[in-house]
Length: 214
Ligand SMILES: [Zn+2]
Image (tube, rainbow, N blue to C red; front, side):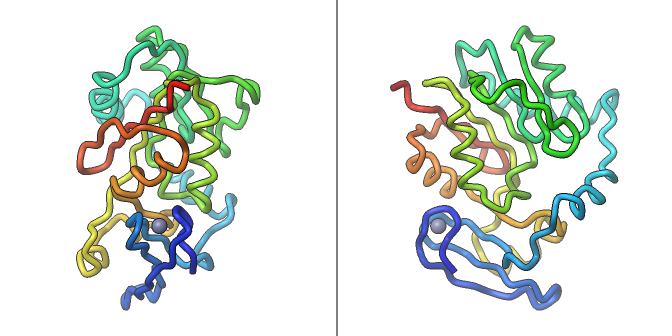
């Protein structure tokens, strides 16, 4: 199997408990499930409908605030933003709008109306989306295309343990809708492939990239 991110050859290992086969890339450190595990949008929606993200819930607000506390100190000149894959809630967009950042929210299931195809943004945020993507490289490229030169892409997804045994015991891949797992190394590779600079990560689950100024 060829790596979905960098095109190198991959190794594979099987989780004895679930029987699921995983492919891992030495070059970019991505790990992805064997494609027969991938679910259709309608199958995924059944699970997403169970997510109970109450917009008034203080914990949910605090969750987004932690992401913004990581992102905002690193960015400048952000007047427009897109929350890509917002789920049912537009809370993150609401928070940014209240900070005078004009923010759209898009989700393929719950908020499918994207403003217009050519609209570009200063900042695109995507929380807990990338682990669901069948083709993360293509989506990453499409999001970079939607940034102005010098714009920022901020992604939240749990970074996986690099050790294979630790990975098998890790909770995050047990969700059947989670199919691909990243480390900062994976995002460094994606950045190079798409003309972005690597700004920062938090060592755990948040990463920030900047599109080239030219
Ligand atoms: Zn790779």
